[in-house]
Image (cartoon, rainbow, N blue to C red; front, side, top):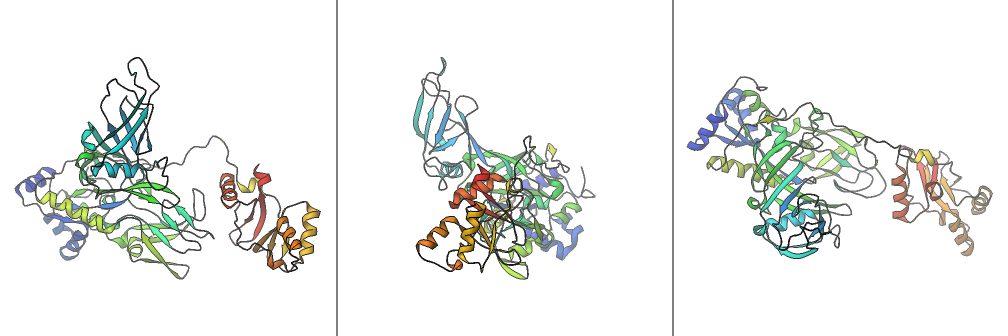
Length: 496
């Protein structure tokens, strides 16, 4: 395949230069300046390799471990590594530890990503396991410790890494959200994104001319390989991913970091760098891509559904500036990934190639460019708030407490929604509030209104509405539209 145009050089010619110590290797950021100064044609002739790098949260990461057999032998049914439940459904003493699995005793503080970081740090890991026992595997329990050197194999195996780009997450709702995109403040209080932009590997070879099965890469501080397209690979929408693997015994904790996200869970930062051989002028042009040319969407995570509304497109140049323009306001914008380490990875890979300890190899098979991402097929119909909501009983802000009390009795309800004359939500009053008002001899409705109201909307799944009620210990949610006008109410009775 020669998407990029006339052939400038071959893999064997570049590897020969690497062996002789005269290969010209630059980072993706350096390539931008070279193309600016000398043009694409000269850059394609002079530059042999462009190095890339990214270092950020990659939740679809984990490791296969082999412990060797005990005496007498055991066939694990369940096992825990530092109290993190590992998946066993393999051979007798193999397991897979996923980075997002949280510890049983310290959830939200420690997880599978921390186990992997501790393992490559040389620390001892506690292994507890049990078995249903068989004639050939009679041992029922194991409780021991091991280090990475005690393992036969320790293989980092990540089904989805090196995202081509990420959306920029914001939150329009009236409460703080705790997500895989970090802590999002209410009312567009901040914005988060991830990815290294012009340094990210898949932005520098978006047509996968040089990236495919067998491509040698920098992975976690050691050498790894691309073994296929990643899960949710969606190149049509510029959301390509990679399936990668490597030997954990070569890696370092500097480039494999267990992390926690407040009230969300655990993950792991993974360092990945990919060399792009400049085989033609097309690749020279692609590897000179700028942050302002890499666009993504600002997405509202305050709307908890799969097809969240896209606010607008934005470039990585603006994202990296620290602020984005939103509704005529400047919103502080932060990255979940590390540009410092992305640059360090690209520089390290550059040094390895210059020193002749890292060679390039053509992929045995390039990755698909036409894969279409599909949502999960649902065989049972989900219920949404609009399916169960009922008309809300409404009073205005200036109503007398007695009128509100009479409406509660007449309509046999426990909740009265308070609005202004245009039906905009202003608060909520419950039968308990009325009882308290009488006990305290209160006469002003404003003194008993709950003004910070947890709300829902028509297209929110029933399960989300139930979770809100449980989380906030309440029994009803006013239903509002995009203009905060009340369209109904859903109570715990409807959910039951």
